[in-house]
Length: 293
Image 1 (cartoon, rainbow, N blue to C red):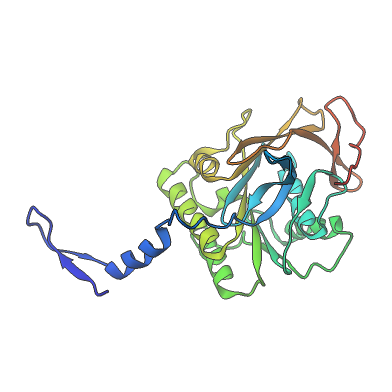
Image 2: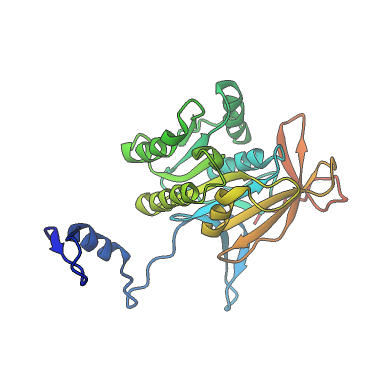
């Protein structure tokens, strides 16, 4: 439909309304209650849910067309935990975390974006995923460091990366850390714009975007207006807290969720192997028993 010229009731200057855009958005936005949409495909699950008739099915914490958050204080292994999730997407199940499952379909891919490290440290972070996959050839793993880009160009790069189709069938995108996509994490307008764009991309490309962000010092609240927006818009918010200062044991909580929550669990870091492993409780230094489904 061509653009129509409308005049408001008070007789002010005519305003142009783009009815082509409106009609397109109308078709995308209207929900027909007579046709139930398919449930979004799950990408990562932790544990299981049980239906009212007793059937068990994966408890998806990351689904396509949604956003999630992993948050913790600085240097508390949130990026390492992210690497374990990336690895399990390819391996199907984690040896270190028995309840975590990956649900890869049709050779889909991961885009893993680091916003703050240079080439050397970013390479080590990304190579950890390959190591956790027993050094498999990860054809579907596409790591990028974007520290060198101007802040205002980073979201544009992510959008163009998806648009370019250079990555085959992306299903899961990690952005580590989301705060570096804008100049001021306490700017409400910029934070809203960032998440408007990310939400649009999840819908347009049917992907899941997982954002890594810092907590405020001494708090379980994600930093700034950016953290608030991330929490508000997410399917799943995962919080990681050290049980006691310098204890080396970390408590993982499903802090907020649109679906069923997974049970809390604990992990430690293996300094020799440079990976995490689950422990049974804060007082138990032994790895949890690896119970397969």
